[in-house]
Length: 414
Image 1 (cartoon, helix red, strand yellow):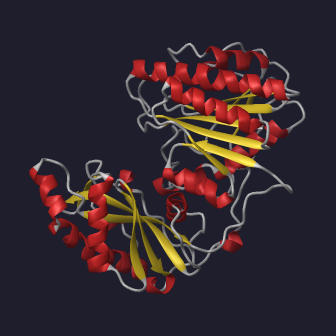
Image 2: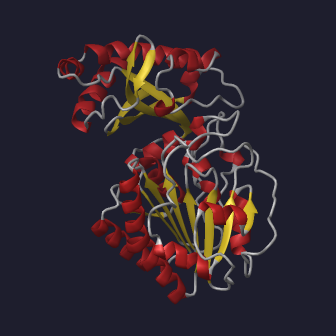
Image 3: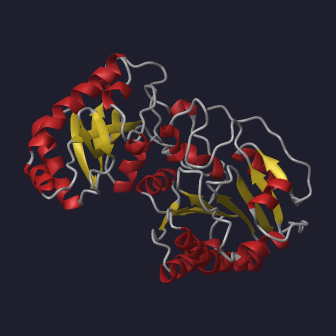
């Protein structure tokens, strides 16, 4: 089985759809020979990259929540230790960086950010360079570490804090989520820390570390050059370091994951999936190289899962990127799927439409009446799904039809 997700990373619903303007000849041919469905949110209408009403942005930065359902994977609740999941963002960061942890550790994402007068202004501290960040992390270890707490170097603005569970004091059964820094821009950061013992610990750690960063020569030079200083370590995404059960639905199951983020790379490592690094710029040569690796993986794997992010905001650039992905990646992979007798599920997570058109092609899939992949066609034809597990059950059925009645399933508990 091949799953390809094209993810629009914008959070603004206005603008040009990923499905408008570009030729997308391979995707249109897939619709003509396959079954069309649409994945709609279970709650109010929203676009990918933003949370449903009453939920947290932190859930969308958690690979377990954002990608686990697409793999048919759910973490074992019994593995949760002290309210922290072993597959939380902090653990994925650590696995992506190949940082060793021990049972009883709690691993935090530590992003170096810019704050001013109590408000978080820049979630990457002016895209701080790794060499500069290394000196800051070294200073934090010199001034703010202990036998039960250490700062770990990562990449750019993204790093780790590893602490012992007993340092955090009494915790509620379900500790509150902490927002990632990109969701905190313009907001007073102290007001968004949890209450009671965990909030007091976080405030103490961040208040102690911030002056160390403020006084550092690296930040003084950055300010002199007109660059944003990295003057606050924002902590979020805590995870336990308990053992993780690998993802193996059946004996000798083999899986491959391809993507672009450090978090997703770590998630793949924790689940025991082979990792392929996808190109961030989607250049033609890079996509051809990735396509070759994925075609080779299809011959030796039971599932190949690809998550590509489309981050361009200019309408012309978006169309060019979509056409390159369509021709250099989607078309060769669909050819391989048909040749090998597999199935492929294609999903386009498009910000302006508020829903996710999905196309299933390959073995046993009968062609439907739709001839083009557009937001309008997806909304008016095919099967409708309100959660990913329902979609995957449809994909796993003997011969999904585009004309089947809409499927309504209960949303999964959050």
